[in-house]
Image (cartoon, rainbow, N blue to C red; front, top):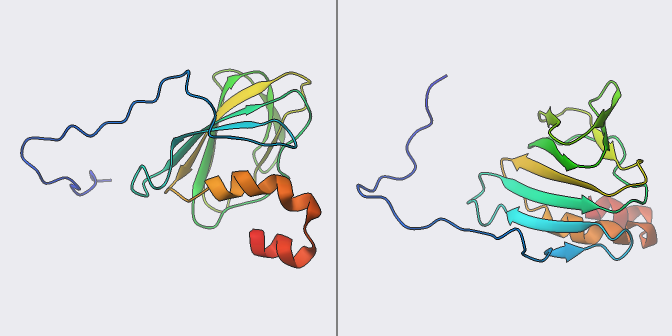
Length: 152
C-alpha cells in the first residue's frame, strides 16, 4: 500500500486547525432518549474525509437494530460504561478502551443494556452527513412505512 496522493500542495503550511474544548455543550440532545450527540468533526468540517461523533447515552436501554452501510465504514470506541456491540456474529460487552471496526457491508448493532450511562466515539469513513439522521431518528415512531423508508 502506498501513501495517499498529496492533497495540500502549498510550500509553507497553513493555520487551519480546529479546537473543540471538552466543555462544549452537545450539538443535539434527543428528546426521547436524552442521548447527547457531540459533532466533533462532520463531513462538512472534514471536507468529506470522516465524521467523528461523541455519543453519550443515558441509562435507559436503547440502540439501533442490526444493519449495514453500503458506502462507509463505522467504528466504535467505548469511552466509559458498558456498551453491547454486535460484530455480525455475536454480542460483546464493550467497556472503556474497547474498539470495534465495521467495514462497508458489515452487519453490526449496538445497545446500552447496562442500566448505566455509556459514552462512545463513533467514526464514519468516508464522511457522510449523519447529523440529520441523529436528529431525525427519534421521529421514526410517528412515521408510516413510506416515510420511514424515505428517512433511511
